[in-house]
Image (cartoon, rainbow, N blue to C red; front, side, top):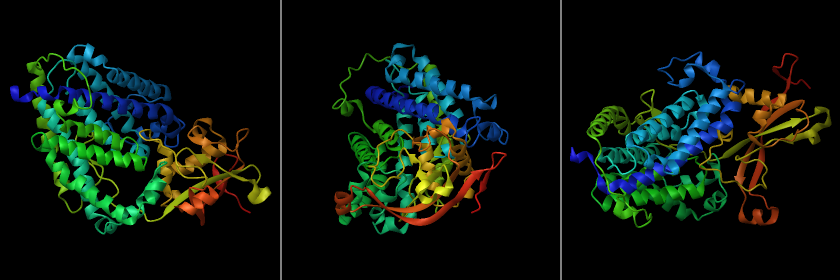
Length: 482
């Protein structure tokens, strides 16, 4: 089966696997640092309670056997170790079949985390990493010839990511069709970065050009991923460049980095060698059993692609949706609608409410806007899960978010694990007696306001988000009557 092999894509495979290893490493580090306070035994949405409500096939996970915070840390740090091994090239020194076991282990371990992660893991880049990780199991390593069907499946994946995102915008918010969405998006996106202020203040004609460029990159360019070289490489390069532009303008976890990684599948070794100088070893053909495995996996993906492909052409297109419990072939998309105003929840505590307004002190989050004079930070590809959900919560009633009420209780208790998720704790010696949350409307400052006040944001009071809460004798939150 010579058609299964692609000797001109050895360097392509090397770059994809190394980059995917880095992203896996970041994902497992995020789990090691954040999972316990968010989803652990005493977390905001405890995994044991969730596992009591779902069956294995509804949420496949190793934790159906047993969950504990210690086991979670074991899974996360095992994932870090294995992904570091991929990045430094240990798989290239081992027998090729070892790569199957390592990539399979990474996929199973991260699948186990995502499927019990509930709302904190309900992001499109989680399933995107799982789908890419599944394909990586069969890519091979070392001096073996890469499998051509797998290269095509990576292209099919990045096609769905880009084309799905383009269609969801075209069918979604009217501002995309009027080319005005970027008048707002850089300011209202979930987590702006240090350059977002500057992007927001670009001239409006340039914003309209950005939208046109986005439609070209997402609705036209992906079609050319399946053309012969060098056209496919040019298409891949355009996707990489547009994703790099998104990296510069905002914090979208590892979504853009992973999309760039997938787009590398469009480059052949001749193109990549212009940027990456790695000598290609003498290649040996894939074993027959491996070639048969590649064909079988390709057929499975083709069959499972029916519903995602049909979803692309459906007027009721779903965004970031999995059609199977193992997230093997999914549908993607982002920002079908764009918020026109930015609202932020400011959580404050008071040691003694009798002191009045002077006694209230704000909790600062690591990534989301708070102090107007603090410059937005760069965190991507690292993912601040609590900060992201605070952005969603600001658009809705607090009582529709079980985790948010649990978060307030943790602050009233002075829970150390929860406080580590925050940038600062205004009550380092003892928990506050009361907590409240206020809603503010935020906008980027003008250049003049930035020069005069050194403030990146200007905020105005929008109203009460949560009333003043205290803990009763049983440790439950209740409204403070004044």
